[in-house]
Every structure is written in structure tokens, then in C-alpha cells.
Length: 160
Image (cartoon, rainbow, N blue to C red; front, side):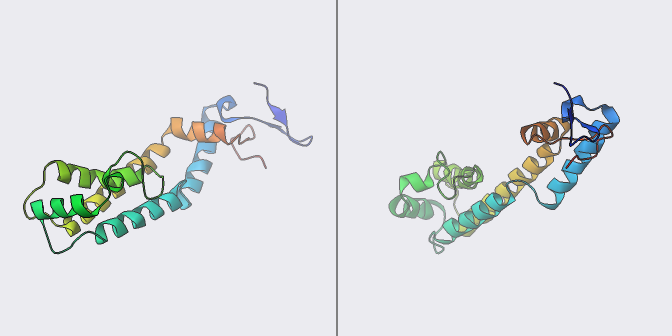
């Protein structure tokens, strides 16, 4: 791939065309943007709020096998199945339902809906933290810069 010249100015390059130091400068530009406004953050918040609402609607007065029976009788199967990301369509919906699926397969006496809610939210938060960390890895940053067709000057600074 050849470099392009931007409006008669200095040539511009894609991330894969930059030298080591310039490439790292371009990555840092992206990392700073992601740190202040992570991709998919709105979807994470929406999914987390939907998860919290879902667990809040479960019977708070029963636990263990009684809670499992209540869920079977009152929550439609598709709403408790973690295959379709039912709340928002974002994958974290499924992560939030994993806690319920594990409980339904093997209910533990004393486990309440509030326990499930807290555990589900913790699981979602860990998954989000892992996703954010992975998005800052060099390969992921390069993929994002390439997919968005960003161009840089030879020193790695962003071309407008």
C-alpha cells in the first residue's frame, strides 16, 4: 500500500506503514481516546442496567430451591436462557445471565436473588475490564486504526 499525500502536504500513512516509534505514537493517540471514551461503553452501561433490573424483578423473599422454582414458574425460558443476549443484544447480557444459568443447574440453599444480582454484576464488570484491557493491546489498537482507516504523518501524529 502506498502512502497518500494529504492536500499537497506531507504524505500520510496507515498504521501498518509506520516505523516503530511513529507506530507507537499513533497507538498512544488511540489509547488516549479510548481511555477517555471507550468504545462500546454505552452498550456496557445499558446491559448492566438491564441486568440489574432483571434480577431486581425476581422474588426477593425466597432462596435456594424455592427461588429456582419461582424462576421456572415466573420467568419465560427465553429470558433465562443465555444464548440470545435478550436485554440489549450486547454480549454482556449473556454474561449477566451466566450466573442465573449456573444457579438453575445447581441451586445452592441460601442463595437469594440479590446474591445472583451482585454476582452477575461483578461478572459483567470483570468481563468489561478484560475487554477494555484487551482493546489496548498493540494488535487490537492496530486493528481499530486500520478498520477506521486513520492516517498519520511519518512521525505518527494524526493527519486530519
